[in-house]
Length: 128
Length: 133
Image 1 (cartoon, rainbow over the protein chains, first blue to last red):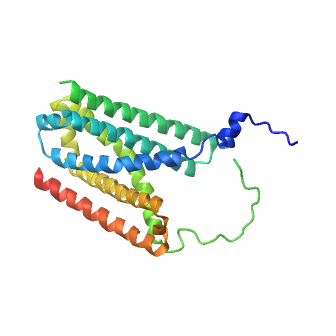
Image 2: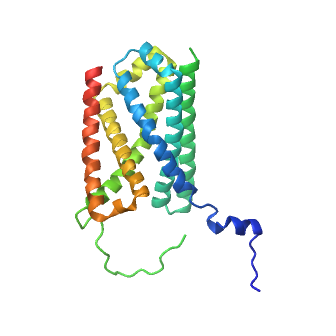
Image 3: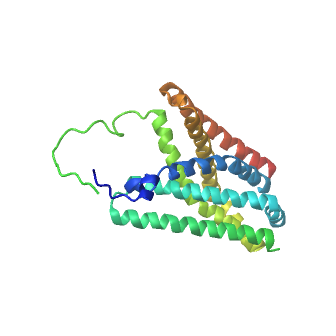
């Protein structure tokens, strides 16, 4: 009998040395699908606030429906761009060190952008 | 990392500099490039949202920078990148659901469609933007 060193759990998950399967592909498409209506809304929103004074802009963005859709757009959009940039880095940076640094920077950048934007939206909509 | 161990002067196959770009290839590159541009552009969106959260003075400063000539040019290119990536992304979603569209002549047609649609939509959005302000 051939000796198999894989654990029963490892065998049933069945992913091998790659550790992950189609999650990246699926999430890229799933966020893309969500981004279509969210960014169409965003474009319309921007057209609505163009040229308006501070109080009108603040009032429009403070609307709970607008704030929630904007926050969803940022979460879905930033996740989409994080895994998208990951692929770009993996394609063009084969050197181990540069690759690890850039992949880490990518995650940091996206989390900073997400945190900053979400905090700004919370302040606009809740902070009076 | 695997590294090539052979170093001989064999002829290379024709590369991107040699032959005329098919439109599908140009749009593939444009999709990735516009994605990269939007990645950087997130900074501008974050600054604008923080300015609205920061109050009237902050928004006035940001509006003056974004409303300058260089600001408007960057915002126009940002709009173009967003619309192109959006239209190209919808093209990708159609490919995923019906691979028939990947057939050479159809892919070429939809590649040209993304060029025209994204440029026209961007210009229309800016005309509407200037009319409503």
